[in-house]
Image (cartoon, rainbow, N blue to C red; front, side):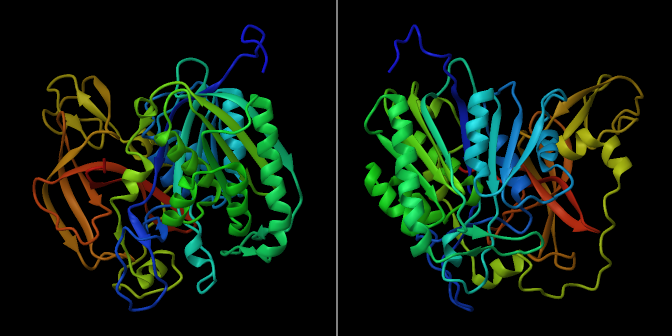
Length: 463
């Protein structure tokens, strides 16, 4: 290693967060009673979640910030021509002068993290994976997200070594328009992936000047490659435990595994994270501070301890693979560009307005105060982190939904204000007046190819 006085300017992770959906699928048998939620399985995004909403959930938990670009990595973007990162940027209320960039493919998660570490940006890794029904590895893929605010200054970990390699290999692919990916025989591709993982990791360790790391993270969709690589690199099996509970999370996998390794690390320890997809990327981090002080939201394992099992037919309905006929209602009108632009702060970032005359918070904002009728000045009030209390609610069994009934509620907001919201992630819970709920960015519906995003509310956050 070089002398500290001659070492290049160090960058690292200032803050991190992970998000795993509450749902787990542990069986693909129709009509079977779902196993206990603490068993292994795949993490399942709800019917109103996609890679954008998962990204907003993870990044919204970050306490630390960065001045660099926002990098959204996913293999399943909701749009192709339109930027999905711009939607995440709007939902997080980021400054207009911060670039928002989209990265695609399974390797994009590792590339986004590496780029954020180099530029001082924020890497948001999110994915929703849908294997072919009946495929042998159907339960081996899952959904999740992780976010990392990177840059100089005090943080949780500093980069001390890195390495990368590119290797063309027909391992896993999906052409535009196809819903499910295809994989080559794992026995064949593992012959290339195992040495690719171990050699790239060795190069990163050499760059860091150490022989082994205290914590090892291996992210690879080929299980015949990840197992031997973990053994060769001295993993304690912690990353394999998480993968068994969530499945491979696509572009987000290396981020969630790294978040778990940081959760378990202590100051002074080192973490090696290596990922393989069309090549390999490895980074070695030295933990500088108590990770819990820099983590946003609950730990990965705390989230895995509070999940609910769902049935296979419910999963297929959520993914639109098993279509059902709902109530005979007209399709909702597609969102239009002009009102979305005019009400952008409210629609994407849930920003209300406080009346200067009477102090009442208006949701949604309007030209006239709903309480006193004043046309005077108003102060923006961000509400995306504001809890609410259920005042009244109704369950609509006729509203179009793949997860009926639709629960609509009136909420009293903490600090003042009231708004109506659709409740989500209710599951089999009983909703009651007085329940505490928190905002969550979700997809209301999709019409004419346009995703209508807005803020619903869900039972109080775990952890």
